[in-house]
Image (cartoon, rainbow over all chains, first blue to last red; front, side, top):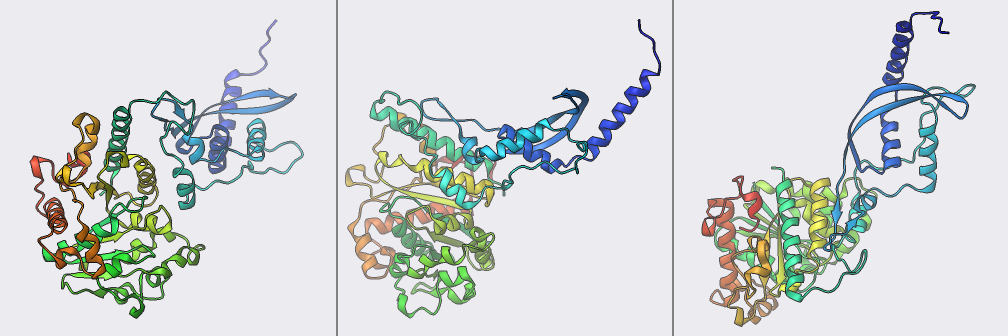
Length: 182
Length: 276
């Protein structure tokens, strides 16, 4: 038997207001770091909350917020067509500590915990831009040489091999020149 | 404003310094105000232009570290239109000296920008590695000129250089692009042309300079005399080739006339065109 004891619209409105207030007071920078660490995204270009809800987590009330995230994700593959996890090189893979921290933050409600002082999510900081040393140490290893990565493929004839290299180099130059900003 | 061209290759012995010295000499013979910046601690480009390194009061290392203004470090050569910012062994210490400096990879660019109006062409001779000095030279440049020995197999490994160039463009120098690949030390049999089937080079061919540099022992000998070959013997094959290359660049940058009707550097299509 259902007996209505209050106006459901009031509940919905107050819930909406609550999530709006939470969203307005989010530390977007910290949140961006959580996403980057947890989902290994190299760069997030935009982020907005779209939906909020109450959930039960380990016998406690928690809040769940869904986000629309715009991220730049590149895919690189070698001459054999094998996927290369280059993003993991550009963005250092999360250490066990940072991954744990990210997990902990993701599971915790964004609002203050009961009986505890509110604190921002703790995630290992990462530089927003890649340093020169990273470029040299990481990218210098990024030679598109199938012998170095993945399953070795059968040796193609010399002409074919050079032709593939030439095509790849042409593509790389075209890519660089296409991105030139005057 | 000068066209700033970095002559770079991670491999040694490809003719970087020979190209830098002789191209600079050829541009100066065409009365283009040219500055050659020697970014290699060996300082061979400096010596190749007849500069006595021990007598220098300042060099590129001093410019990097701020010990001397760039105008004071630049020295004249015997060609009225050619000046050089000399490099020598002291460059080895620069990276260490700047290790704590923020934005150190853009430091050379900032210094060069202050004098760029004085020149039409600024060439940077990068060292044969992908170290701090080479990266600084690439961050300083608008264009990369990549010399490789006239063997198609030498294309292997260029991907490393291009990957780094792409990263530098993204992070530090959005105006960077690849002018083209220059085949050097071409054997007589090739007659200055690449004897390589079209189907092998494919789309890469458009990135090659039309000029190729033949093998010419005089190119090496002239550096012993501290002069570019274009001054030592302008009739030599190597000298003629570098004059032709200089003319190709002048056409590309100034007259916007490209051989075989290819697009000019400022046209939209030139993005794909690559080599002048």
